[in-house]
Image (cartoon, rainbow, N blue to C red):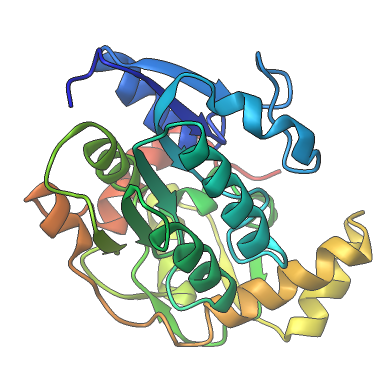
Amino acid sequence: MTTDEHTTLVLGGTGRVGRRVTKRLVERGVDVRVASRRGTPPFDWESPSTWADAFTGVRSAYLMYYPEIEWPGAGDAIGAVAELAVDAGVRRLVLLSARNQAEAVRCEEAVTSLPVEWTIVAPASFHQNFDEGVFLQPLRHGVLALPAGDNADPFVDADDIADVAVAALTEGGHAGERYELTGPRLWTFAEGVEEIARATGRSLRYQPITRDQFADAVVDDGAPRDVAEPLATLISEFFDGRNSSLADGVGRALKREPRDFADWVEEIAPTGVWDAA
């Protein structure tokens, strides 16, 4: 498959990984369609009537679920979208999944059961959760409080994730592969926050809290309870120790080592993103 034979659809093309995937595809000369509620045609996860038209003329697609692949109902939605994609003539699907999560497994099974070239990309927690995601504002205020205990996680760079996804979309040799993506070493949140404190010169700390305390804090920050509860469950389960291991997906897919969290922090700190709020 060459890069000028088809249109590639990118779901979540303005998100942390999706925009990186889109940028790399454009740089390779791929005809890219970014799926969004304001796109042409529009795609909205909450409006199934918009799903089919997005795949017209598409031959490969990057699938991700909003808000998260672990969210309740993701398996049914991803399954329905993947079937629509195959019915529309899509030949290659790359799914952004997650490690050791029941709903993510349902999503993977829905894709891998279809008559299509598929690749599963299952990353650890992103580096970018600390500067683009839910960890940023707490860090600006000096305390990152999470229901993660003292468990360690092999944080992975979203740029590495995007590189793997783009390779799977545009190159041969990745069909039928499931790549678990991690960084090169394990970090507790206390160690990660300490690394950011060192690089920024700020006084920062990590505070372990319970799942219920986290959910209450999210509600206090203005989120509805029906968002706060599944988010609290997602974070407490993802960081309960089940993912405290390294995987070789970046190396297998890209023939290079993944980027270390400390190197990433060293690059990001001078931008001032973690300055006090």
